[in-house]
Image (cartoon, rainbow, N blue to C red):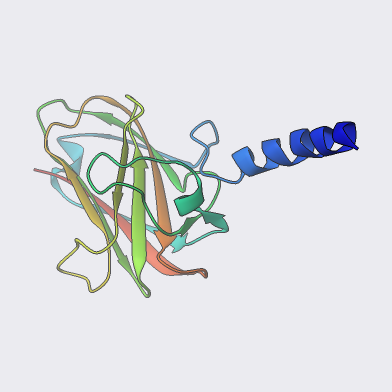
Length: 155
């Protein structure tokens, strides 16, 4: 009986670990410099997914434990060059959106409702964005999907 329970634990454990956003998976690739994003760029996406990030052990640099639902793979992967610029990620959607960003330095950033220009949408601004890859997930606060746009802009 102990062997059966132990075997079941090993079978279940990897699937639990895989049920979270994966930085090693690919999303739509974007490449921009800070100068190119001085004019905002917009990208359509379906927000949401089946990964409940509150159960993933992600620790946000600003707000503690994130809440919401995203896909396993990032929606976008941004290759950013332009040290010295502030880099802003913001969402406009038909629902209560969330935004999850992982930087090349393996820092997680999360937001739920800071986009004051779009009710219940997310915004993250990095004041000293470094060159590198950024994985970006556009999710929803509750289960379900909706149409959304990611807007990238530098300052």
